[in-house]
Length: 372
Image (tube, rainbow, N blue to C red; front, side, top):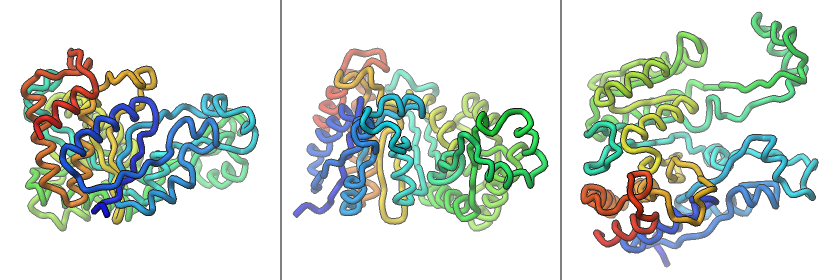
């Protein structure tokens, strides 16, 4: 019987390609695991009205963690249009399966390391080693949205003096509302995770990134809570920046920063910027981590136009597998995997199109596997 049961979620698009690459490397490492396939992705939305079927949720509950490729996600109108005709007008509503996974399993912490590896021609500056902690279940991606705006919601919100003007500008049928709901426990948890990481790995500082001068209540809650949590870590400085200024400073002086912590949407933005500093999304790995379960994935999308072409860089997927091994306690295998990736990049013999080369997704995996 295998030591681990790992949910295998290729998804669609290039998710299938990079997961095939990951399997080559995991097999080379001789990971003692049983990989259990799960249905997830756009095809299941089109034909079943659910991109994350209940059977997949139930399967995940029997596993230790999941490795996830990528899924196609489209705006509401396009999702409705592509739904099979037999399912139209039956009340099906598309909701991102990865966001749903995060909420179903309370994967509250999204960790996105962004590290520059020697030899990568796309490194903006050498020596960057950032870690972005993104709150994963609240904020702008909490999913509480309305269109059209129900009259009951509008009337309830009119207790705020600035709300009434929107009803005068347009009928409720022409008003869309997205919420940014943040809780003090959610803010405290993600900030604490960032500080614990900084403490464990001897990081120099933690920077909380928000916009409290404009988003006064939600941003204010995040900053106040971060200050409270920081008191428990007197040897680690807490820096505070606004999201717009942080984007500028991260481009100008990336080495000044170490651990960044943000709410959901701002964490998504800042981590993509940080990824570009070290070569782009082809090098951007992530872990969606809860108290008892975790899902690991590259942060790039499904890039449907490249599906099945084995063109995209699989390094992000392999680094996500490294994060999974570390989380499982297989730190020796995780360290060996990262070392092999670093050696492959330093040699510069294997480069996918994003690095100016002509090698394939599988060439990257085979080169890393050879070094293992």
